[in-house]
Image 1 (cartoon, rainbow, N blue to C red):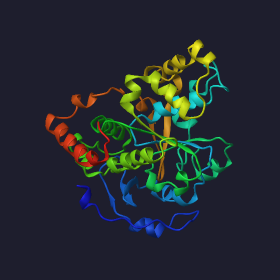
Image 2: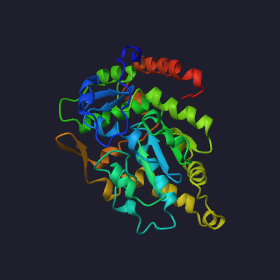
Image 3: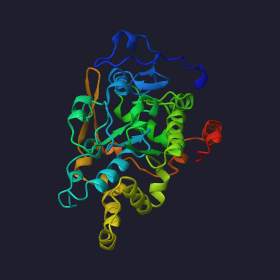
Image 4: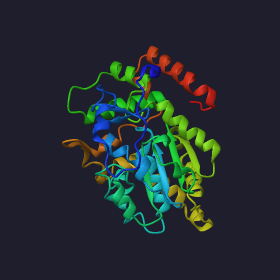
Length: 327
């Protein structure tokens, strides 16, 4: 369990380059499609840890930034599509929309991730207001996130469904033998997944949303599935661009829901082409359609045994019950 994980080292002082000697001393383990390294109690892909450990000290948030924060496989692509379409609707029509030709992962760059336009020098050069994204837990982002006034939208997902989506995705991008469902499940329950433990990730943003509800919006994937129109309207208000009376009369909110729906996005040519994912020593390639597997709530029952489901439920109850966060 998580209690058995080795302690990580404290963050470095501000630097523009990672300390390779320090990186080499951090705990590392195999298991998923790439090795993972434990940095400040968060498991990161080993080939990315050097760049990501610089984000907390070197990324400079701005007061008008909007940061979309997600744990992997919890609705990142959908949230990016919705937030981008809502916030840029005065600049684009559905006929010339960037999402028709560009994968959602690239219109909203990941903070600190090269290859998505998210390296820190590139982000510094972007005009304001910036729409950015991250998989990092709140503890690995700059403390100024909480003080400069930028807004954060966080989305989580029922852990059993998030796990199954994680397992499928990693087996698609891996270059070695696929990890079995049972081995992946054990790692997930130990908290050993990219950007895990998942419970720490969820809870950091959940607690921040309770403390600063006007600056941190906490969403569940299942909410978007069950009532996307309600979420789109709430998201527009939170982002500071609520729909006008004229837009409501014209049905713009409903059009955005349809344009950004799972099926609509999956069928766009931009999301059927190959997309490169950077890793140490080069790139691995996967079909962009890998980002649109099923998106179904409750699909875990088609993969996990009853015993596995019950074990996960007990873990979730143990980790989240004191916080009031429920699934």
